[in-house]
Image 1: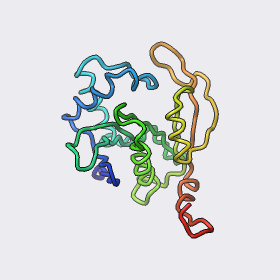
Image 2: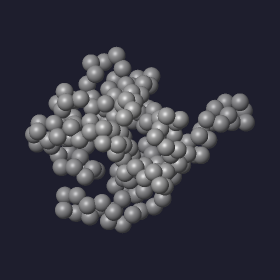
Image 3: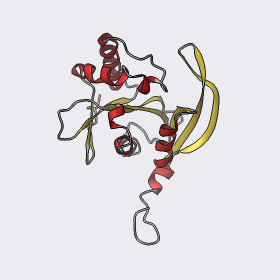
Length: 196
């Protein structure tokens, strides 16, 4: 198996999860503001954080995708969020993505920076196969997530009725997709000689 890919950006280091990340993961998922839009109950114990870290660390090892721990470069290596891909469909050359971030780091461009690095990796030459399509699903009232996806170039595919089920409730989800040609088009020089 290939070594887990560490991704470096101007402000961030995206790395594999470690057992010592449990306290930081608990600090994120013990907040209702974070779990409001995801299929996970608000954490009430460190054991839940330990279990989530173990699952996230094993995704790469089990060849089911990847989940990066997002940390600040030059900081103390504390996890402030995560991003990753899963639901890998090699036959149709697509994956689904997910992400989360500590509320203290919201509206700072951190997730835009992290997802840009992740998408560069996913559409890059070292990815396991030639990826064509990335899918993201979000709750209908998660305005911040939808704005993030649009900023990255994802296209709105409409509402998937009762596509999600958690907390004993069915949830309508809005689907967004990004194609390889759309991601690569952002690198094509515009007519005025600047990057598009």
